[in-house]
Amino acid sequence: MTWSLPHITLGSERRLLEAMLDRNRAELVNAVRGLPEEDARRRLVASRTTPIGLLKHAAVAERIWFHHVLGGIPESECDGGTTPGDASFVVGDDETLTEVIAEFERASARSRVIAAGFDLDEIKIHPRVGDVSLRFVHLLLIEDFARHAGHGDILREQIEHPVARGDR
Image (tube, rainbow, N blue to C red):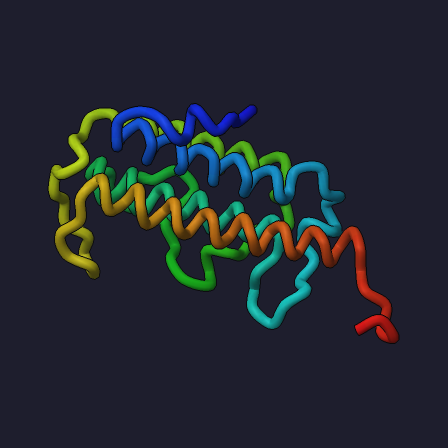
């Protein structure tokens, strides 16, 4: 996906929210696309965070917020699951980076379809958070995905350009 600033800086509030969320979705994928499978699974921090795990987690966030909360799809019927927290970063040994990217892109596409049916101010109830609007969900995931894209960039830099012990 190619981005130019006019697509992000001009338009209605809804268009800006959608464009910024899509931009952060794309940046999250770009942070891990093309990594060898072994590197995509490397744990370089104390948490369960890995490059591939960031995408798995983002797909779960799409399903929780857009599919389940906004769309009313029961959690048990959300493709790929809605396990929150640290468990959402866990990727099965049988899942490839290409498959996890495709899973995230499918979840994002479905989210776009669901969101198209709502006004920004329409209220739904999140079981733990309470009342939320589509506007809130957009803002939450823009922030979440931007943060995780940054994590992905740093992990990729650590993988591709490790610092020698003497250089620290």
